[in-house]
Image (tube, rainbow over all chains, first blue to last red; front, side, top):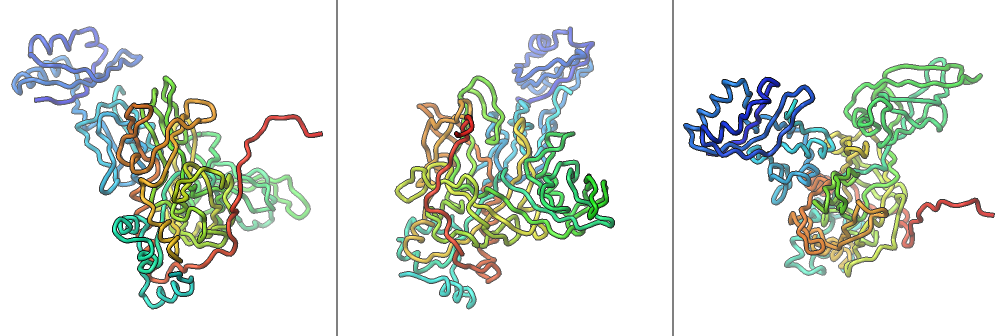
Length: 136
Length: 384
């Protein structure tokens, strides 16, 4: 099983080798897609976690015990699709294949599973319809 | 076989006219020769929905008691041009609020279309005939006399696609362009685009009725930067920015379904407008022109990372729509900035309006220039 999460650290945990522990103790493959530490030393990390279901569950419990907040990535991208005019500007900067447009209807298609929270679409949308919660 | 405007209008009146969208006729042309299309099809509808910076409106606010000769004016916090009579003003789409550079004239225009009330502030020096010096009041499209849209340059006949060869992201009116030619952005509706379906402007000229943001507007004049000198394809289609239209219409009849304010990051405010133009199929030549397919429409790709935006590749709309084009051997992703979905919606709406007789077809009152070129602005000393 493979899932993308945003890990949100408080300043108290920033010094802990959390990723090392996930790999060593729970045999979870961690792919870090993006990481940020804010001026107050709080951190956000976009990770793809892959492993056996049971181990993943244990790993999530471990993170919870450290008070590392674990948010599924798909919940952090918001596209106000009802007012979208389907211009396509966001698709030009979306390299993960989350935002696409093409035949037959040329309307914006959003596949949240593919989002890697790069944030380029937020600025690319001329109508300000996209927001992304990451590192805030 | 040639057809006159009168014959086409008679068929429309009888409910017998065959009206197709430009995409429908392009598909038909794969099997049907132009002579037969000229016989079978009477009108073809074209459309586009894209960013058109050179847009704006004249507003006449009406006179207050006592009256004011408005000089410095703002509406919804955005400055207006007040150098036209006492209570006339022009709001340009790209004007911005001094408080917020991402909010501007286009947003005020959209708000007016929506029917919002906006704060009008104006100052005048006070004259014998216009004694008031300051005014603050709320206005909407219901309270003002006229809001006449006059867009100096709309509906570009083709527009070069954009890429960026530098090492950093650049933010342009062609969207966010990623480093090292990371993407190519383009902005026309291709085979559905109005002026690409009548490349020599035989049926589009001064006085032509157009679908303008949901209303019936007109071609007022040639658009600014009107250029007939661009190289053309075999079918007569120019390979980059060429002819343009100055369009005018009544904002009070427009709809926010077809007019939207936009902000391009680190560039500024602009206005997306939906435009549709019906093209009468007068003869075989017009049938051939409207049969143009995306693969037959050439377009240059320009490098916005280099001064002067030089062309670095030539492609066509079929390739751009495929999602990837080759530039110097490298496959580059493409994206549209104008909405094909909206353009199709407009073309279909216009098709129904033309077929029902609600959107009359007429010859232009005056042809647009057959020869016109564009000058650049030289930095120079005064002539002796």
